[in-house]
Length: 125
Image (cartoon, rainbow, N blue to C red; front, side, top):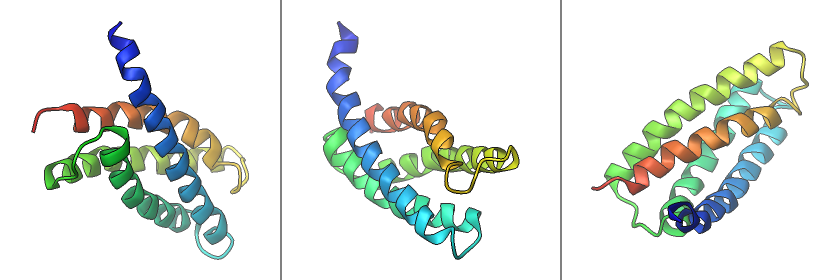
């Protein structure tokens, strides 16, 4: 029963995640043609991070953004970013194209990120 109460929250997280991921990938896709893939990926991640923070706070968890949540969110995303970059370079090393390599990265890193971000927004201030 407790899990059913979390389901709408998870759906909202997925919606925000899809939007943030699309923004991230779109920026990466455009930039990777002109600059180093790691820089393109990082710029996409950084810009989607900002949108993701505000959407996650207001829409997913119905919380007001705060500096403590921003730092917690940033910490969770620092770990997530390192996971992303490590996986991206692993998939590139394994021979995936620059265009397709982010897809399995997202599939692995997004569920991990949900758990980390949920902890940040659900813990007591």
